[in-house]
Image 1: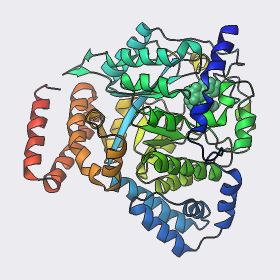
Image 2 (image 1 turned 180 degrees about the vertical axis):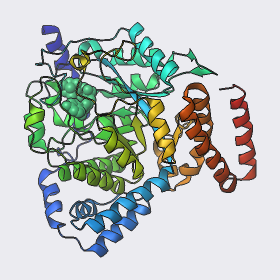
Image 3 (image 1 turned 90 degrees about the horizontal axis):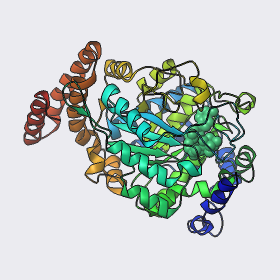
Image 4 (image 1 turned 30 degrees about the horizontal axis):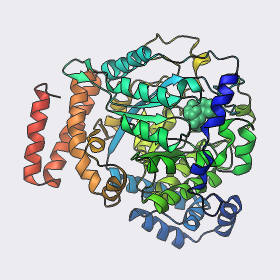
Length: 492
Ligand code: SAM
Ligand code: SF4
């Protein structure tokens, strides 16, 4: 419509793009990336082991080093890489894992990304934007019935779901408080996956307590990007997207998140792109990505491109790319989503490289408070691989020896941005956060767990308490026990 067109013309602020560019060039140079990949083919095992050691000391890798890892052929050397990736995660985050749910607020979109079910030209799907009352109802189910404390709210790019709407939805979600079995449920962290915004709009979202600002570049390869994002749409502007995390950090947003939609272009190239991106943020702001996501392209209703792609990533390569990202940006959180089927999620989570995963996931608009129905696919952006409940996922994690942390205190205490980076790099966060992981897991088990999950969870908690007695000073341990008892008595 005319209204949409006028709105689109005003979105991109060119001066906010060029501000962070280096002499008019962006930090992704396609030729340079291919050169690095070619120059580092056939790396010596000794060199790979040196690179692994560097990752284990929690240092971001150089492009040449990541390129060398990506060129490993020997399966035994790959096994060493997988093992090291698990060790890096353990050193930085220990056996903690965080769960969240996506909340889709609207599927209107002015863009036409060829791979996405929400694209403008897809007339098959039903378009809908949640009212704030509907957003509240969704949050009530998520916080009060399922037991989530963290959400990622997701929006198409459209004047009806622009920055003001995003602000209102964040405020609405934070205002929800629901009585539970033994306490109350509340969403404590609202992360946002939305289109690139201006510095002023991001400042506005910072004011209402935006969590992580997540935008995926989709593909770092310029030519592919141009092909998949038709001219005349906002998303066609590669650099407006590439520098949106820079703008967010400038606006005071503490945490930003990167991602690639794997399957659009060569996966090795994309991993290099993520590394260059992380390094540029580190260089310009002293802060790298809070998390990195690596969604694989999924089928979407009436979206033929997905079937045509020749860059589909096999399960084997998927594991490799996750391990290389883990080693290349060792401090970052890594998100594996329910796009993946349960057996892949199980295998990858068990290998210990992941820090966050979603559960009880529904991606239809309004799907948490509605009954799950057959038309669901028509409201969805793509098809989900794993629809298991949070309770089931947590039980499985507990059986693997992992503790699900519902703690969001770090953010509220200002342990974000540069401060959290130092704690992560030095491995201090691993123990520090375990205390709150135990306390918040206790709350969750008492408020939401099924009897089977509770039984599996109790075992994990007992083991953690025993370990913490050895790992933290007595004074701290006694304080932990005091809080633990208060929670058992119903305090939250
Ligand atoms: N509209 C905003 C944007 O494009 O940045 C944010 C929301 S969009 C719904 C969130 C992400 O979904 C996109 O960044 C893209 O990576 C992912 N996505 C789109 N189509 C997909 C598909 N067919 N399979 C898997 N993920 C997809
Ligand atoms: Fe719109 Fe985002 Fe889907 Fe592209 S990926 S069509 S911008 S919702």
